Amino acid sequence: MAVDSAGRRRGRPRKSQAPMSDVILQTALHIFARQGFEGSSLRQIASAADVDVALLSYSFGSKLGLWQAVIDHISEQIVPVIRAMDRDENNAGSWRGYFRQVMEQFIDLICDTPLMAKFMVKEIAQGDERSEYIYERLIKPLHDLLLPLLKKARDSGDIGEIDPELFFFVFTGSIGMTVVARSYIVRFSPATAQEETFRLELKRSVFRQMGLTI
Image (tube, rainbow, N blue to C red; front, side):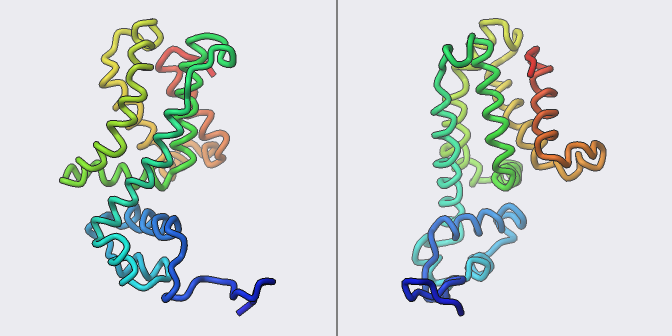
């Protein structure tokens, strides 16, 4: 095995060594997204992360504890980004420009995290007790951040006379499902195999429905 300038061995950590927690969480996310909660095990995740399964039990307590840690990690990555989308009319030029800008940034955020989107779609579709944890840690925070924007868009006539509560779920859900279903979309629209084209056409389709342009 190669050795770096400090005399440390390079390569994957041995099972007696704990990798960075984000490596474990990313590995768990990948397996949960592919196989679902019920179809996954701590042993599978430990093997894929190249750590001892006892480390996962010690760190997270159980498979559910690790699953919750994955949700928390997603929340910590996504919610601050949405919160940071503060209104800046000087840059956006107008309220309408700002609204379009936030919607575009949200689409980019979901496109940047397709594995997270797949994981969330799979879990929410289960409709079991774990869905409540997702609601509290991710859906409700996003809802509370975006709803005032959607209400103003409704009042300003930018999205018509629609229910902003329903629009939140239609908008976020449709973006997530479209990103998850991309492999099928490419079969019908080969041009969307290109990342830039996929994002552009997704934004055009969504914005056209809202009466916006890009």
